[in-house]
Amino acid sequence: AYTSKITTVDIALEDYGTLYRLVESGDNPVISIQTDSKDLGIVPSFNTIAEIKGTEKPNEYVMLSAHFDSWDGGQGATDNGTGTLTMMEAMRILKLVYPNPKRTILVGHWGSEEQGLNGSRAFVEDHPEIVSKLQALFNQDNGTGRIANISGQGYQYAGEFISRWLSAVPSILKDSIKTNFPGTPGGGGSDFAPFVAAGAPGFSLSSLSWSYFNYTWHTNRDTYDKIIFDDLRSNAIITAIMVYMACEDPKTLPRDKANLSSGQPIPWPVQVKSIRKGPMTPKN
Image (cartoon, helix red, strand yellow):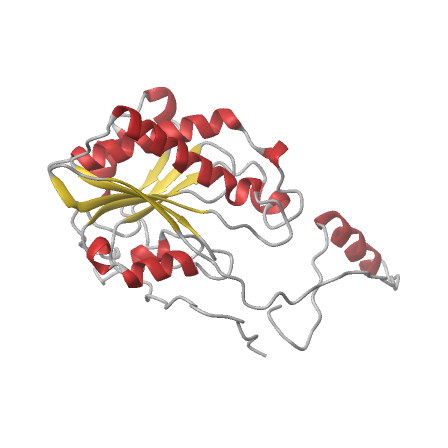
């Protein structure tokens, strides 16, 4: 509850289940809560951007993407330490074996994602020259599992390009990846969405969940011991290969939007402005 009138305290799923069962059976449980909070005022947030300059098409871009902030109550190991590690390792691989890419490779580690995708939204607003020349962006932000799903995000020709880029990935890594083309555009959830809303091809490399949403996500259980490093290694390899293929591709991914089965244009998300300065005011 995002409000200034109702006190909100998050509790563990197991504790919530116990309270629910007590109430359901007719008991009247009484809860005693001891909690501390502190208003830290306005705290700076920032993005970290790294670059491998392109040689033939330096003003066209392929991006790697992951937010590096975490929910305030946890360590953020799988949200989004794992996504950040994957993109850093993919960049290390690319710098080692592909130091002179045809297109410029950028990686964005975004701040203030948990407060509303503010870092990536600000980048989209501030750098139209990059967004307009973006071949593809690959984002990771949903846990420690292997890459399991890729959607075309509503772009009519995404399937042709992503399938070609995936073709270079070893079968042992790609055969378990499900694709959905053309898919539907994501309106939020993670940092690919601001790029999609601006009409740029941003794609989510969605992971196998490992009970992400019902166990570790936005809890103090999101700790280092939950990380599956074998999956991270595979994800970094997949990402590096797809970035390489997108850089080398002689064609540019068109931005035509797919139609619904009815023939009507697919509904497209509206670009939302970033919040540049807090505090964020509760709605009520």
